[in-house]
Image (cartoon, rainbow, N blue to C red; front, side, top):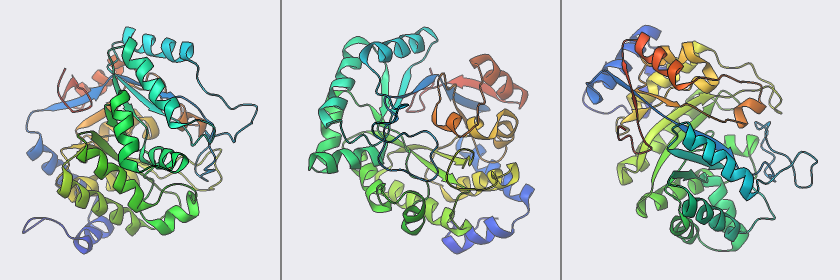
Length: 342
């Protein structure tokens, strides 16, 4: 068991490597119940909109991107964007997760105008532009990260998703996403966002070319930043989906995912919320995750394209999510990005 306060890296590694599977899950669940004593599991109704699939990164784990000029490349126009948002609102959605690739032909003003267009017409939370996108905008415009975030915030940005973290270890990033931002840049974007009053999430995509201990280095980098800023609302880990990508791997199984989830809850003692990933693991494993540290079931995912491009197409309605949560013995409650109950 955890004694004398926080886990250090060696203690966490010992638990992650050697603890009995059920013991690890029980420890994580106990911590989850201390943080959230009421038997609630939250979820959000939102939509992932990819404004473009054009990207010059060429990350080896990504099956979604297309290079500039490709016959399957796209940039959404205003009519397409409006149609998706209006459908989301009709379905009870309160948030748009807006992300795309690194498009070399779109200036920062394109994103400012897109946010302004949405905010002038719709009352909806804009959770948009992961740290690699923001670093890319900064390089493209020749301005600092703080200015990029400030301009997007003025245009209507409400919060920043934790995408593009993969594994926050530069030696791993150099192999799987060498053209994407570094670990320090990813963390700097989040620190600056928090300084400007924006809340963000944090993620991990594991099971590709990292070593198991790299996953813990990632967790401790997040914990250290959260100590300084307190700006992260949640942590969301998911397993790499290898189909149609340039990294031949077997998909991480349920036990591997649940062990990672449990150690995340134990290490990230300053994160209130840990999210289950039904989109990649499926509903049954996500239900089990509620006993391995997770207190949130994530999004209804009215639309999801990136994971689907890797051949994984789980779909759940609000009613199905509520049924899964209830059958695990919890009460489902809808929330917003700040984890305020709706």
